[in-house]
Image 1 (cartoon, rainbow, N blue to C red):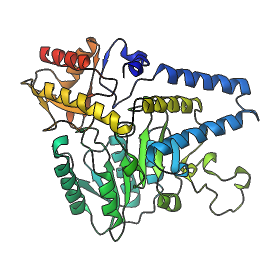
Image 2: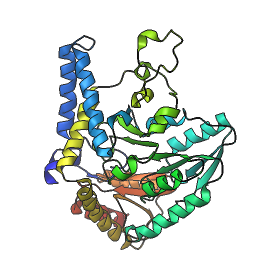
Image 3: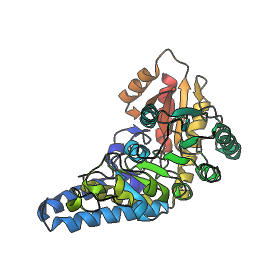
Image 4: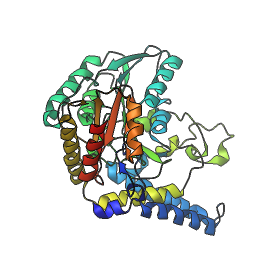
Length: 394
């Protein structure tokens, strides 16, 4: 861990708890991006020599991401971020007037707003799945799973066409039983599509059994994976590739550009490329691959999440011992997100600003208005102690 931490210049002069917003970029990943830029310029940015290089960069990156998710690389589409990974296939799904969407009350505003706009356009109904009220910790994970499954069963209706739920809730920090829900939906008469926001799960918790089972599993490289911002991906099921149409259409989605004026039926790729659009930043691919390989060197995904849980449990316990601080979860968190409230005359935003003056960085969540601190494999006990000390002063 200390060797990896030494790779992160952003951690040299601050105590950082915002991995759920954006992770710092390792020096080696930054150098990989720079090297890629230089190679492209040496080959010529638009020459016959550069295309094999770019094609190989895409292929290697998709293959590595596919291995992390335990799926075939043809099911991977490269995106800019989580939101585009969710929305591009979502808006291309076949809906009929009166169909219903079941959306959890812990989803990111970007996804919720897209669903609301989709409902407006297609005259759909939105039902809310309550998972915000589930506040048990990791020691009662089985009870939480049972309650989630029961809530989903109760929320499904005859015309439910889509279920939207994050793998790891960005506000409470709870892990949702995605694989079990996928199995439940598969056994429904109408087999609703299943969209999973994986912003907080990719590169933090084991995802192989979940990413391969859902219809849309979208994530970014710039959070827990320590990758560059502006690059993410989405895992698409075979039925999404067969049934969803591109929404923002560009040349990357086409099987061949030369026949686009012909009345050709189905000009789009049958793999993940059907949801890719146009020119993107190739050097970012090298940066993300480097970061993912560095993570692999730190151990398996199970080993990494165990290290994270040890730290989040320490932070949760330290917060709970402070009289005026109330952790959101009743028990230790199942991953690295730790949300809490403070009984103080200071507003949450004022608290974040005052901590920043001490070079300690946490964030405010807007809905609900909570404070959130994230720990990763690069976090330390000293950072946790310093955060607690400064919170007590406030």
